[in-house]
Image (cartoon, rainbow, N blue to C red; front, side, top):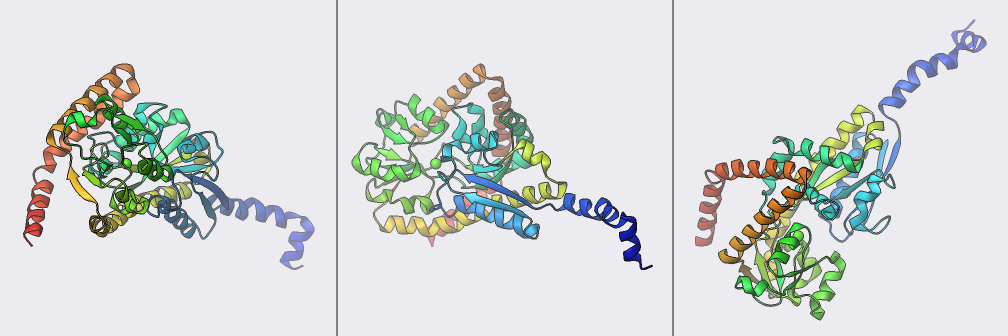
Length: 363
Ligand code: CA
C-alpha cells in the first residue's frame, strides 16, 4: 500500500497534517487586515504619508500577509476623534498626535510636546531611553491603547500674523488658531485661542475672523497659502519645540498579534519616526526661501514675549500638577529630563550649530 492510500484509509492524514504543520504556520504568520484612521488630510504628504509608509513597510515585511489600510481624517471618523476610534475598536489603530486629546486629560500633551518642552532629538531620547514611553503607556492604558512614536516635525514655526507682535500687550485680544497647551498659555496672556481644522484656517484668516494662525512650518504652511493674507511669519513656535506623532493601537488587537508582527509594527513605527523628520528637514529650506520670495516677512518673538510666555507656562504646569497626579508624575519626569538635556546641549550641539550658522551667514 502506498503511503498516501494508507493515510487516507486510516483517516489519519488530514488530522496529522492539520494538527502539526498548518496551525504552526497560521500562528506565526496569519493573514490580517487592519484599518488605520489618520488624524490628517491626504494633502499633507509628510504627516499623512507617514501612515502610508508604515503600512507599506508592514506589508512588505510580512509578504503581504499583514495589510493595514490607511484612511484620511473624516473618512471613518473626524481627525480629532481618532483616539476614540482606536480605543473603542471601531478601527484597530490610529496615527495621531496625543496632544489633540488634552481636553480629556492634559497628560496627553507629553506624548507630542508641551510649551517650552524638548526638541525632537531630546523628545525621542526621552521616549526610547529616558523612560518616557513606558510612563506614557502606563497612562495611555487607561484609554485602552498601546502607543509608539511615529514621526516628528522638528521645531515648528510660531505662525502667521496679520499685524506685527512687538510687545506682550499686542497679544491681548489676539484671536489665534493654535492647538494644544500653547493655546492655554496664550489665553493666560490675554489672547483668544481658537481650534480650527487645517482646511478651514485660510478662509478664517482671509476674512479676518482670526488675526493669526499657526500650523507647522514652511513645508506644510506654504501649501495652505497663509503668506497671502497674513505676511508676518514668526519664529520659533515655542509651544512646539518638536511635535511627535504616534501610532496608537487598540490594546486587545495588539495582544492578539503574534510576537513577530508586534516586532514588525514596532520597527515600522521607528522607521517612520526618523523618516518623517528627515523629510521635513529636507523640504523646509526650499519652502522658506519660496515663502520669502512671495512676500512672507520673517520675525522673531521678542525675548520679553518669550520670557512672559515661559512664566505663564510654568505657572500652568504647577496648577495642572496640583490637580492631577497623572500630570504631575509625567511632568516631573519630563522636566527633570529637560534639565539634563539642556545642560549637555549647550556644550557641543549648541556651540557647533551656532558656529556653523555664523560661518554660513558670512558666506
Ligand atoms: Ca503647530
